[in-house]
Amino acid sequence: MSDRAGTSISFDRIAPIYEESRGGLVRGGSYARTIAPHLLPGTVLEIGIGTGSVALPLTQEGHPVVGVDLSANMLTFAHERLGARVAIGDVMALPIASASVANVVAVWVFQLVGSVEATLIEARRVLHERGRLVVIPSVGHFEPDDIDEVSVDFQTLIRGARQDTPGALRAAAEGVGFAMVEQRFTERQEFEESPSKIADQIEARGYGILLDLGAEEWQRIVVPVVSALRSLPEPNRPRRRSTRNDLVVFEPV
Image (cartoon, rainbow, N blue to C red):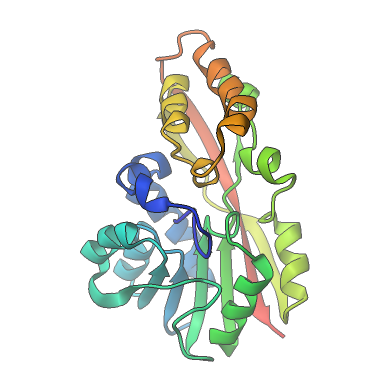
């Protein structure tokens, strides 16, 4: 699950905290269980593979996964898990032969790519004629709680709109030769998280969209959210949180 692919974001700076802030192999395994039934026999290419937290459980279930990411630091973690099946690569210019893989998987990637259309074109190029693209967008659907009440969508505030909603992805995909064949939710995931911990992760720029945010925007957009989180009752007390993501499946037409 990588937050960056095909962008100029300096994601290497947050690789050491990536596992903690993204749920590591626990969340990765959950996503893998949701993805696996939609995969076709053959090679799985994960774009924006990050630390390999989704690819490893897919591999353990018998799926031959290879992956690319722009971050050499992230790939250090992925290499420890997957060996030589990972490589540096831009999702908008994949170092993969045309029509060479049965599946392309993208988990928490499309929200930050430089061009959704260019990324989809590349996915379409490397897929077999009857291949599949499986995408899990980054936005979570949380059960209401006090954290959710003060949280904001940084993607929308900074960019004006999300580029990885199922509707936005479907529109872009249909324009480059894909058809959406299924949309569903991932497994529900439950975990404990405190307002203070989230505030710490935000201040550490643990979300990819925040890495290159300027000082003025930081003060205007981020500081009020951090303040609201730290002002919640018992901010150090972990809350039991529950969330799930969308999963969308595309096929070439």
